[in-house]
Length: 608
Image 1 (cartoon, rainbow, N blue to C red):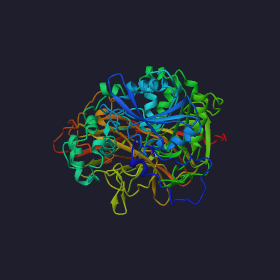
Image 2 (image 1 turned 45 degrees about the vertical axis):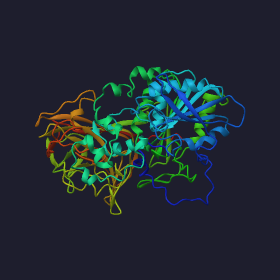
Image 3 (image 1 turned 60 degrees about the vertical axis):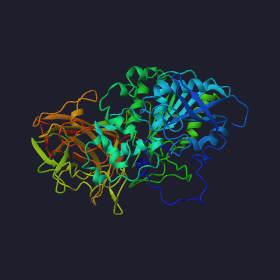
Image 4 (image 1 turned 90 degrees about the vertical axis):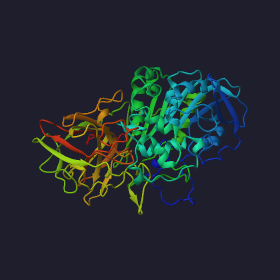
């Protein structure tokens, strides 16, 4: 398992009983080997005097060997790394190395979220390429944080870097994590930052988020939650806009143009870093010097299973359920084998260039894959649905509709109470779920049955509707406070009332002060009407006949995001009493609030 989102992401995969009696599926990854067994401890010097710790695994055959490299913040002998693959790679003639990122594990220096990758990564690669056991050809493999590290490394064009497999990667710290649409991902931050702070391991227990709602200021929530200060947590809150720290994380257009190596990316419709993976692929396919050698596979997988193409590394069997949804029979790829074929081509030169199409996307609900050379696929078309209805849209008795055109001018209102936010940590067996909540496709019908949630739905569908691409919400809003959040998500509502969330994470979010982007903050004038553009992320789902597509709009999802206190003050240091916010959504011909979707054409023929 390799998670940027840690155990939060793992919560959406329900694999069912172990099937140890079954032989491993031939497309599943090889059985994991003992982490650390046969490893040589290696020290990698950097030009600022910092030394990084690494484990090196070598084949039994004489070298030199091409090298597959992972750089991870989770510990080079952690199950959150690819270390368990070492025997697979050495058995196929590769040297395999796992490195503790700067300031994590046994490595020196201070950890700064992803900011070290573009500086340290090229040095690591060039050092590895120059070792006597190395053939001089280096490939990078990773997932989540360690899957983003290769992209950051590639912009430096280090000598020896031949190709990368950057699975489940993310693009921007303001599109999650640690901020999503400017809203602070509090539950993730309090959990993840402990994982990458070795000195704090074992010093913190479960977080009482009920008590933490009223804690002020947010900067010291680490102390309130864990009894210790967590430096990386506070680092996030000290850098709330795209400042110099984030300049080393976010890739510019010129950065993408500098990438000159092939890349093979796996992600999934229920992967919490899906949107980042697709955004990075699009940028590399359009701008990179190696644009023609970019591949992406998007399956019905979550964050932890994407690299393996939907197979369980533990059982060797297909992961047949993600949240409330069954995975269809064709929804798998031999992920590890495809990675080996890729590296055999670009590192060893013993295989032909992969003949895969640049894009392979699974169509959930149709049990098939489509292929394309770019995104969006030419089979995907845009569709717009307008917020409408003949009455109040407040749940439970909402009369809000999603309609083909704007209707008469109208408005919907609700009150956001910071002391009583919509909760993202779903109750389960009498206990609340993980910090960020159960992510992905779960039934949230009961969770959103409250008056501070607005819902807009299509009539029951008479033909299937397949979402396959980005969803965005343009919405006209006013409020009586200088800052508030718009949280929006899509659901598949069945005739029996269940509402399955169609999101790889929890929801799309925009914090009002970030409506102009992450470069600066702009508070509202209470009462002014503003247009928000909320990115709901990438969707892959087919709604069946009789089901309804529903949009829900509200202003909190705690602790997935921190509660907006409505004061307009700096969220890190704000000690003022929170303010309830009266939120008004405007719709109709004068204020055409609308949902934009990418949908698969009904007549699109299967490619395979």
